[in-house]
Image (cartoon, rainbow, N blue to C red; front, side):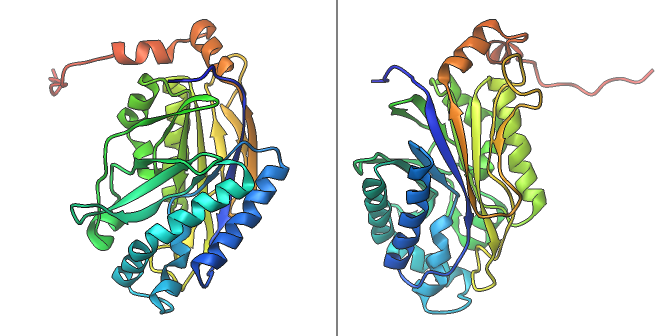
Length: 299
């Protein structure tokens, strides 16, 4: 059952990749960052895709580890890492999206999975559905389940992990299920990759008249096969319409710097722009259904 939506103080982390030596050391790092988020008034904190994979080479006992060794070490440690995430959320008293982690399913496949953890430690998951070439061709991570939505104290929200945000129908499915906010944990090793996610997130906010927030990994890690280079900044995008910034940027951080980016988001603003905006992208989006185009004839 959904709750009556009310404003949210959101915190998105530009997460500096480091090399903690154990799950306990990683949990201590998470506690540090979440304490900062809580001091900033955050109610929901978001970390990037694969943030915990900085543990991989230490868990594999190699620097750097081979790609497969790093992944297998992470999958083996996934239950302990997930418990560390839940403990950190409880200690901070925050709702937490701690990024994503590779987990093995009953069918033997490894999937990239993002938990949403409540302040009392309950959790639910969103899988990454579309795999990048690195995940599919080199790491052996398989496509996950279809998009879901989550009922929270601030209304219904969605998660679209990194590459999934580049596909309009993934986010659209969540918006049609009632999401007014879609969060995008991301991990990109070039500005090309970051900008694909950045501009896709802005486009999803425009076409759905919703908020979309991104949170990236940042920094270099030559000891990690998966997280060797990391570029980006955290940001929140909204509709480009009256009552919002002219470029749709609600908040953004400094490129490649470790920091929290905070934003105060009110679902009532989304309801208002969908009802009274200069345009009705959200309403008109499904009406634009065209047959498959045929080649034009030249005369």
